[in-house]
Image 1 (cartoon, rainbow, N blue to C red):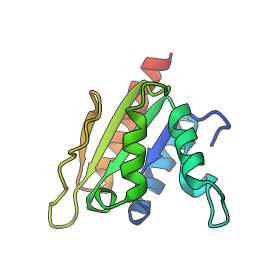
Image 2 (cartoon, rainbow, N blue to C red; image 1 turned 90 degrees about the vertical axis):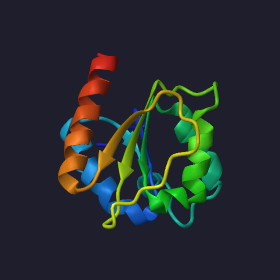
Image 3 (cartoon, one colour; image 1 turned 30 degrees about the vertical axis):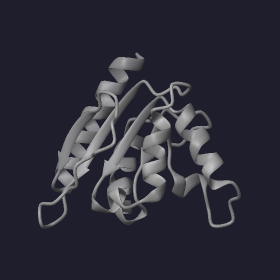
Image 4 (cartoon, one colour; image 1 turned 90 degrees about the horizontal axis):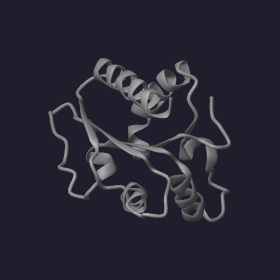
Length: 142
């Protein structure tokens, strides 16, 4: 269930779409609003950066899917930089560190203010961590 006033901004590299899709299944289960570029931006969209920046600014929760793919994504890097802007509504930051088959995940060198970090080695990890994140969010927003 998406919302015109989303709560969650899901930052990810397009190559990590499988993790995003599995997470959205869990988020929908809890009936929470979210924003993803796949649902709001298409190849014909003008002012992509403007729409992304507005979505980051208006979200309450920022969830970063951090992987080798996202470390090389210009969009993900920009989204990380935008959440450090003091003029946004982000209350909490979560990082899902996604390890590849070789057990590799790059260090997150960009400073995120007090993020909650979870390690994801498989889809069961991902679903469990999304459940934990959603429960934490519900405690925060009532």
